[in-house]
Length: 280
Image (tube, rainbow, N blue to C red; front, side, top):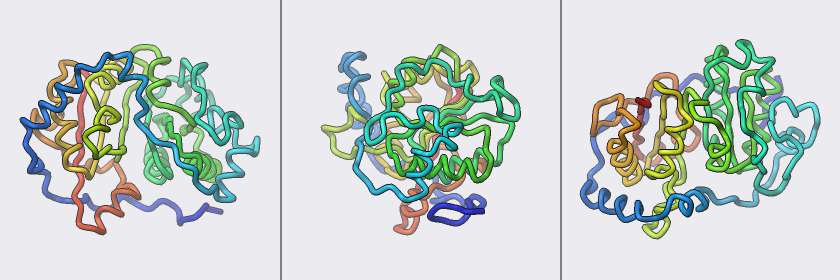
């Protein structure tokens, strides 16, 4: 089997950073930062980009997947908006793209926001053929590579698309998703950029609306301030229940493979934190 750029995704690595204690950062300070941000009008916060698109080189595999019609079944907006942010305004139902999946349109549906180069998403999809996965990303090399892998592996339960996740979520009906995954999002380290963090009360209210009751939001980060920030935001939302208990992080579950970004951080001795919340 031809595989672009790397070997076939391997089994998950051992958890990165065994200590899941709360990071040594003042929770009071973070709580105040979140309260300050909450004064931003919702319609304005939804218009602020949570990502930055960078011009990067496309591998031969990625370019083929993005342009060859044979890969259209794996990219929802295939052949459109190449070289720019994808238009998702006409996508109002993700389930309709899974007629040929093992369990069809009604299988549990996971949306992964920002899947990078796609290794962990592909591995999770392979491990759960009875579940459907959609990955949304703005990074074209990752979109193309993931589609190429899906084609090579025959993964009919995985679709990817180019676009803004907030714009997509705004278009979807309530209680449309079973799981939302956000692994190693940009931590937007500078204080003036905190408004760009994906996990804010406004944006997570939107996520909660799109999750079914009992649905799961799962995030992971190796940036301490963002880990505690997410814990503070989500623990104080009535829509979510912390599956590890309020104030606690979760161990990395077996079903989440270590991402390429996570492995790179581990090489520098950086721990990571998982957060698992259920919609109530």
